[in-house]
Image (cartoon, rainbow, N blue to C red; front, side, top):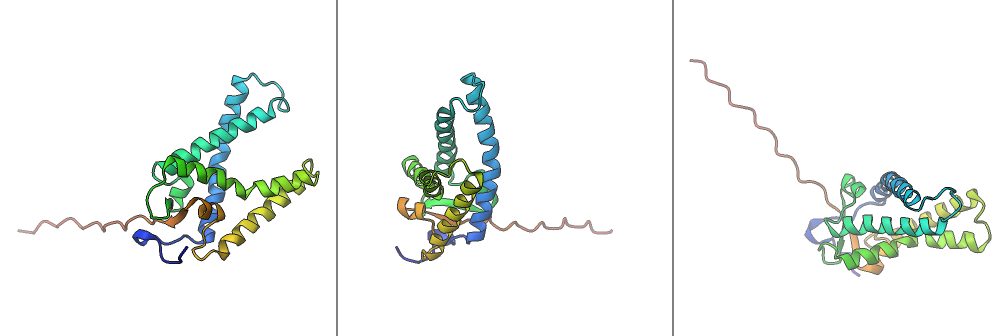
Length: 184
């Protein structure tokens, strides 16, 4: 991998822009997960939140996959990425195929799985503080890995041959003042 600028003049985004988009994405996904959870519990007639949790988790995994894969393969931007002027493209700067978007979705779980697995293996999965602490440490470690990459790309982007680029909107044309009628 080279550290040459991205194709088409698109610059790699800064980590703060990506983190802001990450947080905004969490807000958007809260609504997606809420509606999906309601739909699952309605369709399965779930009466107790502790019954059917594995089915709900699998359903949410599928719904989140559909959300990300659909947006990434159709325009390269989710709602949050559009707001923060980020776009995901392949290594040549082309839009993602559905197969590459699927691989990116699966690899993106590297943000969370190592932290969650360590909490589970240590038997701390009943402790909310341990879960949030491990998640924070895992995300911080993942961000640190991106700082070490020459183009500041995340591990899942490197694995999948994708990259995030900054795509600012074109500058707006200035409005011309309407010509004033001549006094006769």
